[in-house]
Length: 228
Image (cartoon, rainbow, N blue to C red; front, side, top):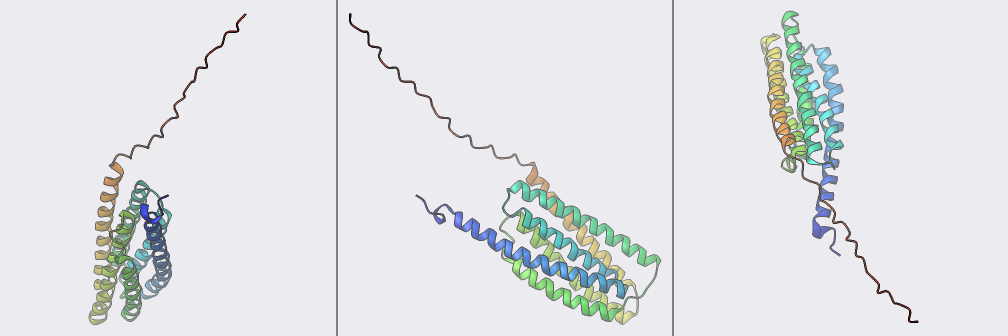
């Protein structure tokens, strides 16, 4: 009998277990950082911090979906990628609305708090990025997950730039500008993820393998005639 490793079964199982460990780790990190950044964003009156916190929440949800479809088919993974794309799109629109609100209601953010929490978020996302990087080409599920992590790093750097500029200029506009750019990044990434996932869903489903039907064999027995 062929062994598990001979038919690649062991490799597939090990890969799924590795994906599961990584996804659980980054899910927990992002969930914790969402709470930290959301609270800090409200206290600091920072659009960019709130945008980054929503990104953390979105990623935690994304990683949850990724765990759900880990052992499922490519079509299930494509459906999960569509849901991820929709979440990214919704958060992008939400941050844009927040930026508009800050334009109409001017408040200078707390740059020191922005910088401190932004640096903490950058460190957390660097850890997540390092764990996801080597799995980025494994499948559509992990590819879309890694894309979310990459976007996080860009957003974190943007928050730090906004904090420095707000402190230097004593102005709300750098924070609003960076928040708007983060929203644009969400929207661009959501379109990319949705396009790839919808293309996968348009592919025809593989035809089920039909099992060979047993052939009925009739055996005719010779009839003996009784001799009189």
